Image (cartoon, rainbow, N blue to C red; front, side, top):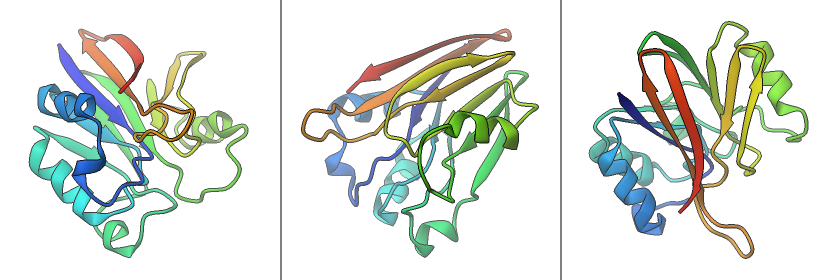
Length: 162
């Protein structure tokens, strides 16, 4: 079984801003996927250092220091499944974003995306769409993250509060 931690929209400059639950999940996950908007390059450095395996894209608020290091989208093969990762980097209104990312990755089994700050788990035809929400807490909104367990082509997906 492959345990994947999914994060997005951390909007932090330093590791110390992450919740203890997210720190623990990074240490336990087989693979960490970040769907963009790290904000600070020091945070990206720490994810690279602390993750067993990290796949990440840049988001619309990430500056050139991060954009030079990461792509705007990825298509991964995880346990035989096509897993797409996108922020989207073009930003814009969050409404209807799932339709846009489905157009970008029509062949994906799973699409992991950020930008809206709203956690969401949807099934559209054969594709699972997962937005882990925002990786930091604000007034009235907790930090959230996604967990995927992939085993022999089967997927268990959940969104948790940090």
